[in-house]
Image (tube, rainbow, N blue to C red; front, side, top):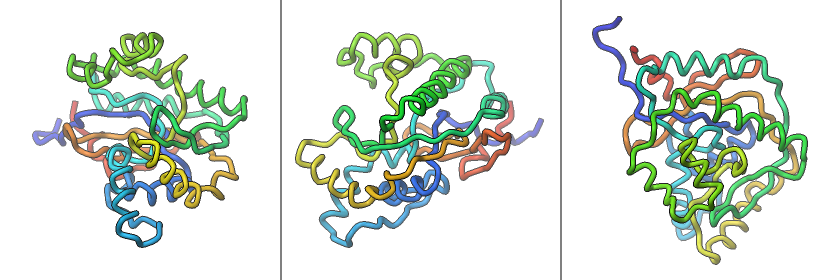
Length: 253
C-alpha cells in the first residue's frame, strides 16, 4: 500500500450522464462541464441581463453537473472503498443493453428538467435501471446524518416520498422515481415562463430525437460544498472512460 494514498471523495453519486448531443447542449445551458470541471461559454444571445438570469437559475444544477440521478449522492459506508465501488460499477454496467428514450421539457416541482416522453417501453427500461442502481448499491451507502435528513425537509414530503427517504436515503426512488435531467433551480412563475422560452429555443430541435442510454456514470464530490465531477463512465459493453474526478477512485483502502 502506498505511504501517500490519494484523498478519498467526500460523496459519490451514480448518475446517467446524458449522451451527445444532449450533453453538449445541456452543459452550454448550465455553463459548466462536470466532465472537465471547467466553465463553458453559454450559447444564448449576448445580453448581460439575460446572462445574469440564466447564471442564477442554473447555479444549483451546475453544482451537481448535467445528470439524471440513478442513486443520489452518498458517503461510503464503513468498510467500503472507492476500489470496491468502482468494481461494482463495472459489474453493474457490463452486458446491459443500450436503449433510447424520448425526452421533453417539463416543470417538475417548480424547477425545469428534461423528463421522459411518452414511450412506455423506454420509460419502463429507465425505471428498471434506476431501481437496480438504488437497490444494488445500497450496501455502499452510509446512513444519512440527522442534518442530511433535515435538508430533505421530510415534513414537506408526501407519505410515499418519506418512506423512500427512510428506507433509501432519498425521497424519489422506486414508486416515487421520476427520471429528470435538471436544468434550473426552483423558479417563480414569471421566471419559469422566461426560462421555458429560452430552453425551447436552445433545445427544441434536439428533443425531436431520442437520447441513447449506453452507459452509467460515477460522480464524485471532493469535499463538502465542492462541485461534483464526473469520475468514470461505465459502458454497457464493458468499456470505461475516465473524466476529471477519476483520481478520487484510486484512493487506497
